[in-house]
Image (tube, rainbow, N blue to C red; front, side, top):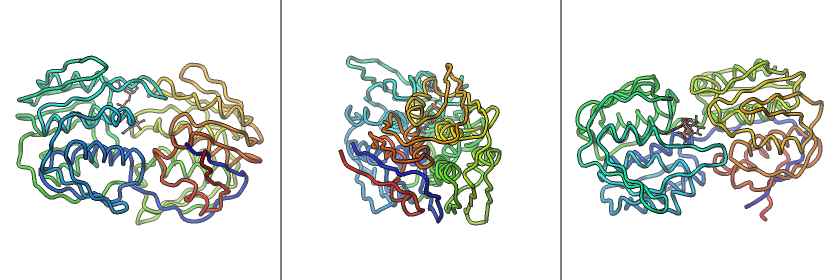
Length: 421
Ligand code: UD1
């Protein structure tokens, strides 16, 4: 893996174009399996996880052409319903392929996803719902899972928690189910709405995506051609806004969906940043680098403050005037990166799911290690705001969610470069 080397203190100024959302393109790529023809996806981010998903689709028999952010997937002749173990293990979210393969092939062989850097990430809700729809699920040796369903049946499903992945998997499986499937307490994330839009373009009868109740009528006629543009990445937008807030400067973001980042902007404004929204997906931020503490921020499902922005907000608040408290309610183990921030001189006390952040006057550069994607992004933000040089090892984690992060930030004035190990 490579290292990112940052010399902190340079104000940021310029324009950043926000790419398509990783968490939207992955389920939509899975959904292209429902199209017995060609799907064209535009605005796809160029990320390792996207390449892994394309490798999975190839292994199932899809023919793929990729030109920059445009991907064409021909799923007209599938040859397999087994997800190669080494690919599934590379990306925990490969589980979102389950519902789509089941819908298309009536059978899936996939390895059970283990825990990951930010928590256990079980799939009990996915499996319970598929069972309710009539799927047979067998746990095999070596952590493999076989799911079979000759005749999926629509039904009412009440999720115990609005899980994003479970909502997506059920929506995809429901496309092949007889009758109507109703998902109650569904996740409301914008990525669900994007998946719905792709499915509607394909001819699927689905409504309610983005609300707590999603209804899908299965087994309708599916078109064999579809073009879809992926929504902008709200977490990437929030990360670059936080970077500008932390080090100071004025940045223009383009290609943003303002509503999707409402909760992020809410807290950045309370922290002291001036943020404006313009027509055509343009958002500007101005910050003098002075940050107010925030009394209490709780992560929660959309439209609450996203867990995927929690580490970046903590990095920003590390230099705030006063003490901030952040409670992580979504994942149980998402504060590990704070150990690395401590090396940079921050004062963060983690007790269970709560982090108490006492703002310090200055952070200092240090050698730190990225251990997960968003924790890695937090280290970049801290490094940009710190005095001196920060080396972030294991930068490959960051590449899973940010396209060429060093190029994007260098263009707006950051001193950041990549050095291969
Ligand atoms: C998705 C996002 C991830 C984001 C998360 C929460 C993708 C590819 N990833 O992950 O970036 O951080 O939403 O916004 O879109 N849970 C269970 N049982 C289940 C499923 C989930 O207990 O069967 C728990 C999880 O452990 C977690 C919570 O529910 O504590 C939320 O998880 P979920 O919404 O499913 O997240 P993902 O879809 O994995």
